[in-house]
Length: 304
Image (cartoon, rainbow, N blue to C red):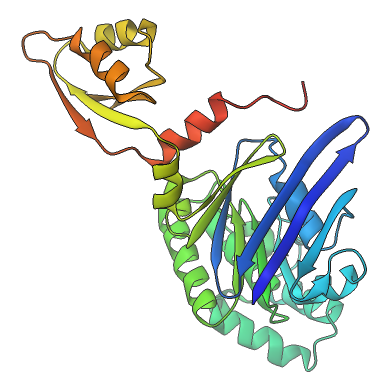
């Protein structure tokens, strides 16, 4: 059974179409990464799926409930973590969770709060003011509040922005534990390493869905070829390659250049022209970041 199964979602604000015919399926217990540039419609799509916005066109089901007719039932079964920390900073962690428990009418309140604190390692910080928490601990508090009512679907909108790598790793370990227990997760992110930890990814660009599948499938279907250049004077080589036909991307990576193109023969012809003493060229692996950049380059901003 699919936790999310929506078709042809459209959302307009004035004369701007922010989400344009987006369809998506997410299986129960699956972690799906939702990728796309800023302003691409990710947040608007997520808000339609959790019942906070009504689509102008399209329909479907979330957790078995009709997207249009049963939005209130969807809200009760979903945990939604927004981009911005939205808790009372002058209340303690415990007090914030007690407030959320009462909003969801969870009883007994203390039992739900204590269990949630223990599950996410927050018990020792229960009396700490939320406003004094670091980014990683604020993130953990936000996740605790989202899962306290035991939702079936977790929607995370860029949850790790501004969080250090260790906290991000711990957060994703927790997400995988929750998914293993049957929770379905849809998470928007700009971090390629996070996208690679998802079971599948969907890429949206300026309102339109461009690709869906596993990371390997999306990379393979993009049809890109990548070569790695090593040697001296890489800055000058990069400047020349950017002028050559058939070169889609030239990016420095440490002491190498990654050169990306769609046509292998044209790409190899361009690279053959940079042969100098000490310069080597070898085929490399196309990364998800290469595909992300290629999608962005080929998309038109729907707000312009």
